[in-house]
Image (cartoon, each protein chain N blue to C red):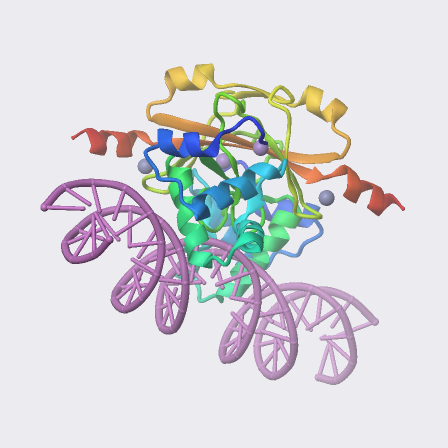
Length: 146
Length: 146
DNA sequence: TGAGCAAATGCAATATAGTTGCATTTACCG
DNA sequence: CGGTAAATGCAACTATATTGCATTTGCTCA
Ligand SMILES: [Mn+2]
Ligand SMILES: [Mn+2]
Ligand SMILES: [Zn+2]
Ligand SMILES: [Zn+2]
């Protein structure tokens, strides 16, 4: 993620103006292949131009509410943020390494989840399903064995 | 959860002594049918006997590390804690209501997740898979429509 | 029984992530 | 240009969790 996404278009479609900060936040999230923490995003955006921490949080809240980005949980404190599922990005599970704390995207087909039955029977309203696999990533596993 | 679990036995099996605090924490978690926040657990244990907040956190860390309880994430800050999957409790997904913030257990079969393929192909080590359904619970949905 | 010792607990301070209130700046619109 | 609303900055604050160190508890063995 993501050469395929026109962030200006995405923002406009959600009724949001394209500010430089919003664009930089989206770029920071999109240019890495894995979700970032708010702190990471703050740091990356700050490389381009000074920005306030609070502004980053407000933009993240806004973009998440508009379903442009997706808030992901982990076993650490604090959320991670990735581009939300859209026409270019199928929903997919993530892998959280309990050793190095990195969150990685798994391929959409790697873990089949059938939500059909639940959607038909659940008495409330289902908005999304988050699947997170926890364990040791390849790197951390190798380092352990040496 | 849970009349079926002998907490003393479970603690002993993990090589842990049964202190009153550990027992109360386990009971607090087990006697509700849904996972609780650290704050909730602190409050419930405090009904029996004064306990320090830090002690609750330390017990939760210890029990989670020993796989007696399970740390669950949500979109709120802070984790929830439930009894970990064991012979009496099959692993199961949870439902998080974004309106009232309550986390509920879903039945083990309600959402089929096939981890077989991933376990065979993933280059790291998989410890657990957390599935969380987010949305509006029945209560909150009804209140909205009135 | 009772010292000796390690584990468990308490308490105060600190850390981390996120939020709030309000002032200032920016950008669109007539 | 001047008016207005949205966006941003800044300081203070909240919620949750963690750390360092002192004290208490409870097992073990003399
Ligand atoms: Mn992803
Ligand atoms: Mn449960
Ligand atoms: Zn790792
Ligand atoms: Zn609800």
